[in-house]
Length: 181
Image (cartoon, rainbow, N blue to C red; front, side, top):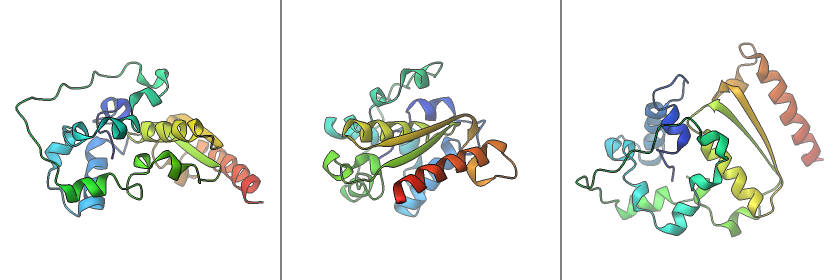
């Protein structure tokens, strides 16, 4: 389950990055459900508000370093008159760790190998990566994090366009070689 109002989603709701909130939400809904039904409810983060405390802790903003929460618009207050009943079949998909790795229990995450997580500043998924890295560290998984402050989602695939992509891929290869030996 993603929190569509975490700091990165609020900061880059309308860009300037290629993967802004609208595009990510479209991808996410099609991947999960095959349609855009309930788009407005997800845009307003109504399903997230129906999670229980144990589920919310897995994607808590407290897992995001404070520097990434600075200069971010405030979280919108939910409209008490808007109701959204999350159907059980939707809930089972949204909470499935194969769909949403942040929803995994710590016991499931504990079996993961050393992990490399790259995040970029201009990316609505940045905070999901930061939260996932923090959760893994908290349970003792070795995590190598790379944060690229002046790039956006997918930049590492464009080595001819983004000079920083070559450097990041080289760093990943060093990690990969070290842990695959």
